[in-house]
Amino acid sequence: MRRSFSYGQLSIPTVSIDETQIYGSGGAYAPVLNLLIRLDGRVAAFKPHEGIRFLRMRGILNLSNGEEIVSRDAPVNLLVNATYSSPDHLVYLEFPIDTGRISLLEKYRSGGDLKLRLKLRLETEQLHAVAEIPSQHLKAFAWAHVQHHEQTMDEDITFPHSTWIKRVLPQVGYGKIHLIELPAVPIEETEQIGHAFAALKQAQEHHRNGLYDDAVLKCRIALDQFFETVDGLDGEGKPKRVRRFKASWEMKLGAATATWLKDSLGSVKDVVNKAAHSPERSCDQFTSQMIQAIVTTLISYAARQADDQTSKA
Image (cartoon, rainbow, N blue to C red):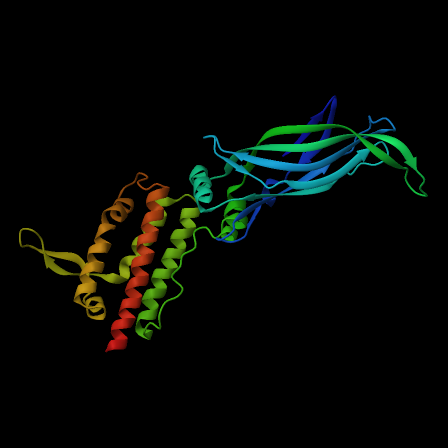
């Protein structure tokens, strides 16, 4: 993005923004969006005693629904006159956010590029040279304040999908799967838990890319370790292969916990199966988030309960 502020009849300063250089920081506890602004203050129309000092800048990111994310005031401190102007003056805008605003931006982005409206407000001081200060190098002046101005600029800005998921989301703690603090799971169960964790990480990646049905399908794969297909009977008493909760997990968890877990897993079965068998998109962002949260919690709980039962034995 490249656009100039208006100052009277002049177009100064010129703003350049590389949308691929936005990045996040602060983690989940103090998330911040960071945007680098480059200012070109060059101008050829100044009279010898005219000057401008750009004091500070504020940025506002607007969503189409009217929501705003406002930056902290950033110092600029750029003096421009007939003898000096910087072609590349850097300003760093910091936009404090929170988990609610991150979720809002993710919902608005919906798995694609993030398109916003950027408003910039630049506080500017008009100056007039009242005396020349002797100098062996460039001319130096004593400046007097003439007038205060507020320059404004509005422009559409698009942050690419790939930049957002690589440089922003991980740095603000969004979408972390917390299945790390597992107990000392017996060695024969390690492969099963690792399989589920890998599937949940893939679900998270699909979710960031806006592939919500695929994210839910990975949650189904994560749950496969709890079920097995055995010989059974249908409603008419005819032989049929049926899917049931593994007997081995019932032994590890105990009857009461196994029943609770089986019922809990059943509560997500319909949503997961619909994503698996429907050719149409069936899951939105909220559904994907909730299924991931539920499945991650259930698997972590099962691993801990299994370890507790093993320890008691």
